[in-house]
Length: 379
Image 1 (cartoon, helix red, strand yellow):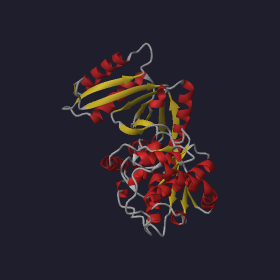
Image 2 (image 1 turned 30 degrees about the horizontal axis):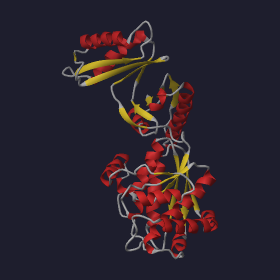
Image 3 (image 1 turned 90 degrees about the vertical axis):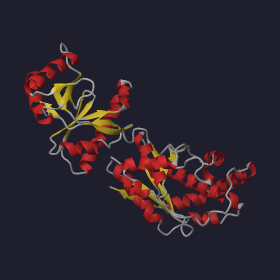
Image 4 (image 1 turned 180 degrees about the horizontal axis):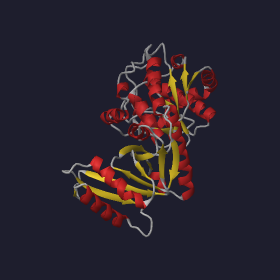
């Protein structure tokens, strides 16, 4: 059984749209992993019937964006009359005589009440199984839910990743480096309903020859998190030549480089009909990521720039990456040879105008770079 996320408090029409998207994600995840099961929406829950191994499937589905929690469950057939027998059998398998327990009931149909069914089932377990009731700090909690034609019994809840169903908020073009920051930022955006199109800007020969390999590894990890059955990624080349070919004050070269990246990502966003671009930047992490320089970069971008990690410490980002299972991306992605010895931390108005003129004049070149990009389809 899958419990849905925060969007269930929205109005009915929005809930229907979100629920439909979540069900589609669940079906695609099951298909992607070769798992057979019948997916049904029943009174604000999603139930997957016919599973051979419900526990591992519940763990898998807890990682689907938009899922609040999951549980492997027993489905009671025969209505309320059969519930007592099932609960006794369930409790006998799950509770030792030394265990304390409580029963929590949800959505009991009229004229029954949640509290009344809890008291009744608690008494049945106490008398038939022998375990003691503890309503404050029980060893085990048995959950019973009435959902449509089903009565559902479980004692296990796997915390879900939460958020909104994947793709429900449109798409974003994600600038990925192969490191940990851009990957965490991408998963954060995915968690809030954005589908992502990863883009890697290859600065070779001014960057590590391993850069593309590392970027592809990062993109593949993002693909594993994607509930859909396909994802498109772009690899762009010869960008470093454009940066090196413009005579700008060395102190603003890194800002020029990022402005070019933003504009390349914006071109792809236009072509893919995405409303914005995504980066893994955090304030103050490097010279180009001061508030002053990021403000200038935002103005140099044709598309809105989303920065989920803007005010996070690196140690927090690493911890989040560990929770997502992508901590192996916590590594150096190389030192750029275009980086000046003393990059500015506060671009001047005159320097901003220089960069604005350059960006305006190279639009055609950037379009050609996108035309010649490698497009990788993950299916």
